[in-house]
Length: 439
Image (cartoon, rainbow, N blue to C red; front, side, top):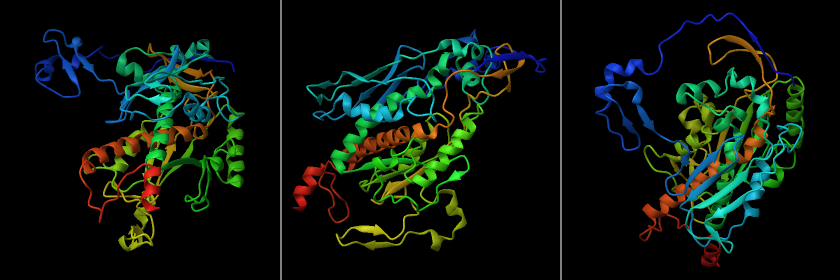
């Protein structure tokens, strides 16, 4: 696709450079002290202000740091806090990376990457050692020349302008760190998280596309109790209902040929989640999910359980009545809470939804400005998804899995070190041990 920049008369006004507004406040700023952020202020030159904050690490106990950029040498992650003696292989991680990789169908970006992962540390003889696990994926299909115009002009609604506003410099090719290729590290770590959850508690995390543009999958069509990865991956849009999957694919095809893009919604469910995960008041489970999922590229909205629709109900209509099931467990008749009450999981299926905006980089002429503050028109080049939601499915599953593993470790460390109150609490045991205890 051809790319072009056409100049317009610049209508904006100039402004002062740098941190001139901080000059009179340097003495006040120098007195501030934060545990997570270090601030160094020069008393004579306010431009020496330095804020050291990374933002590339997620989790407290199961900690994941991602690294790399779209057109750099590669991307990946370092996982710290993984339990030792866990069987794991590169093939186990590759399954999830293959679901995320580009070029897998006509409705995804045509960039061709195998996203083949290598485990460089933390695993020996097929077992985790308890030390940091380094996972690396090389970039092999970069086309930096596609971004020559974007080095001058900002793509509307992309991170180009805000990265410059924050750092004063950015990696232009492929969007650098703001590219969805950053999520490779998340998906690789999430694959490991999925394995831990399944083996420790039988917990399963499944996400699927429930909306593309104006095609909305009706609630109740998908049975969350029996939902499987095979159902989700049975078509290229990752909607488990074949009829609506075809409608969604048609909607993406219709805009793809026009150089346009559309957004959508990914629904995620967690089955067999142990009760008791999450902590009041600032670390509520749904708050952890919201932060993790809204950190994904292009995400714009989050809701759990009844979400915004619950505002149309009365208290008696919305409440989930309790009952005792045949195994003596406390359950709820309905699940409008979405499996979480008071910020703590109650053992029911957790259900949440994430909204993704249309891809910002499109092949249509748009008004924008340059770094030199000149108003221009831009037709962007490059290879981009006409709709991000099919490939967002494994990303959503990964982030939810990382939250749950981190919360499982927190729960065990605080509430399971001493004998539990068996009348009210449930033990968290590996699947094999749980089956033995009930045999």
